[in-house]
Amino acid sequence: MNIVILAAGQGKRMHSNLPKVLHPLAGKALVSHVIDTARSLSPRRLCLVYGHGGDVVRAALDAPDLAWALQEPQLGTGHAVQQALPLIADGGTTLVLYGDVPLIQADTLKRLLRAAENALAILTVELPDPQGYGRIVRDAGGRVVRIVEQKDAHADERLIREINTGIMAMPTARLGEWLGRLSSNNAQNEYYLTDIVGMAVEEGLPVHTANPLHAWEVLGVNSKVQLAELERIAQRGYAETLMEQGVRLADPARMDVRGSLECGRDVFIDVNCVFEGQVQLADAVEIGPNCVLKNARIGTGARIAAFTHIEDAIVGADGMIGPFARLRPGTELAEDVHVGNFVEIKKSTIAAHSKANHLAYIGDATIGSRVNVGAGTITCNYDGASKHRTIIEDDAFIGSDTQLVAPVTVGRGATVGAGTTLTKDAPADSLTISRARQSSIAGWKRPVKQKTSR
Ligand code: UD1
Ligand code: MG
Image (cartoon, rainbow, N blue to C red; front, top):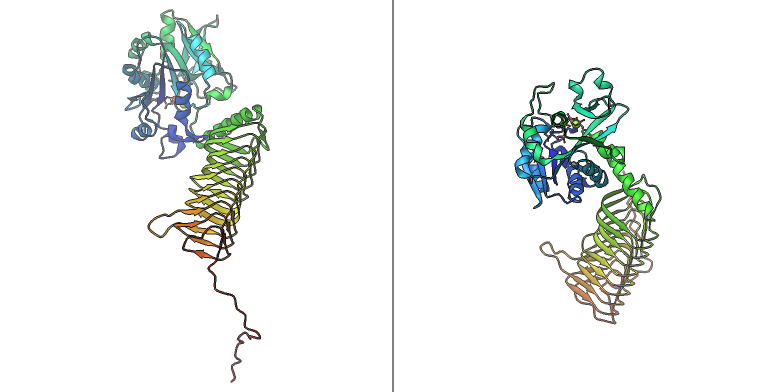
């Protein structure tokens, strides 16, 4: 079986410099949804017909299993498939998909392929308003005779409500000859792929139709409005799958998955969370409202409170993060680590039971177990040229408003007094403090403003 994906169309109505098929849906290019579904059917050849914005499309999607057929100029869907012919395997069935119909499901395509055994098969739907689509013309016995495009159809043909979705499967062996016989003698001066249906009928080849399992699978994207409609459909689908797996969503209409989200048992997700890339939530994780998680792994029982932003980071079991925390790339927190409001952590590991509960910046640090990082603590990891590491060993206590000027090490069990600017290592089990001694001047008077005399 071959699959040919048509993606050469311009997409004028998107009003964008980005080629239409590269616009993101659920965080992934429209055509990438189609490519992934196609791959799941294990075709012998997977060929993309590209044209508009060609180089950009190819550069964005190139992969070893894709064959690329340039269609320039674009003379219609039949002409498009013709460009792919030299690149596909002889024999078997060829399945034609559209790069701008992203939600088509593998199960539907399998049904279509079954209908295409020794036949030509068309994926069709009945629409209350078939305006603009090619119509399926049947004879008195209900057999498909041909497809007529809207612009070429007579008034009575325009009443037909069964339309061509554009997705078709046909015997590869006949395709070359059929496409060679196409003419552009029609209302749009295009080579219509749909004309091969009439040719198959003339040859006595059976023509079958199949229907998608859901009507939304065959919706195309031609405008930003349609893109947004399909985004909601895709998101509703993700939300339903998660709920069926046992995830509790505060509101399935208010969460967005732009990648893959894997959840354990008894996970709860509050409203307005965005999940990007690969995100894993273990059992009993709770995500508060308005969180963004990108490429993150959250351990069993961890709680991520409102407005937390996590990227390329790992949170251990029973962690308590946020509200308003930011875990940047390279953050690895072991179990039961607490990270509170306005704490930013980057490229750092924090071992079990340590806490940084308020207003801190921890960058390029290795922090041991049971460490307390006081409010306002900052690792001064950057000297303007290079980054340096801070090491804080187990059971250390870092007083509030400490600056750790890296490279620097705080020894096991050490205490650093509040307000310290630490420029040298703090020895284990000692108090280190760098703070001007406090003194008081008794009876000191504040200056008062002099009255100006005239
Ligand atoms: C096509 C079908 C019509 C069907 C409709 C479903 C034909 C002649 N008509 O019409 O029966 O009801 O889709 O949406 O096939 N493309 C190319 N190269 C081209 C032209 C198109 O790659 O030269 C690609 C487009 O990028 C798009 C797909 O083919 O992905 C369909 O093209 P479009 O112009 O939307 O076809 P319609 O006229 O809508
Ligand atoms: Mg169209």
